[in-house]
Each structure stands twice: as C-alpha cells, then as structure tokens.
Amino acid sequence: MVGVILDVALVRKEINVNITVTCLAFRINVKVNPNKDTVIQLKQKIGEVWGIETKDITLWRLSRKMQDHLPLYRYHINEGSDVQFTRTGEPLSF
Image (tube, rainbow, N blue to C red; front, side, top):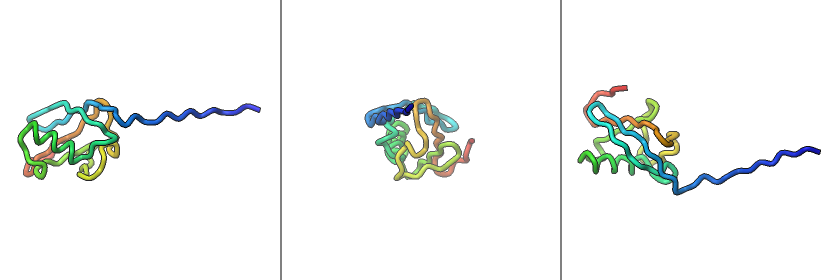
C-alpha cells in the first residue's frame, strides 16, 4: 500500500515584509507584519512619515479599497507588494 505524507508547516507569526506605498508624488518602503498588522496600523505608519491624519488616508490594493479593521494578509500582502495611497480630495491614479 502506498501512502501520501502531508507535512504542513505553520506560518510564522513574526515575519516582517517590505511593501511599497505609492501615490502621485511619493513612494516609500514600509516594513509590516501581514499576519499581525491591520490596515489602520499601516495608515498610522504612513501618517507618521508624511504628517497626515489617518482619517485623510485611503489605501488601495489590487484596485480594492482597504478596510481599516482588516489584517493586511486579507489583501494578499507579502514581500514586495504594492499598496496605493490616496489622500482625501485627491483623484485616483491607478
């Protein structure tokens, strides 16, 4: 009898990845943990760098508006991912 052995590895919870956040005028690299960080936490990091309130930041991934309460992994964020940034009152550029 031949059997199949399935080895399932746990996803590391402490993994940090580098992503790019882009808008019309800027591009920055941000380190995040997709398994722990939420969209609002990413907005806070962006706000600290650019001096913008989180309420004025909208993030987009694969042309979908990202919801503040969701973890980043829900948007398939991994190493090298690109997230688009718009500020309240600015036109979309993608």
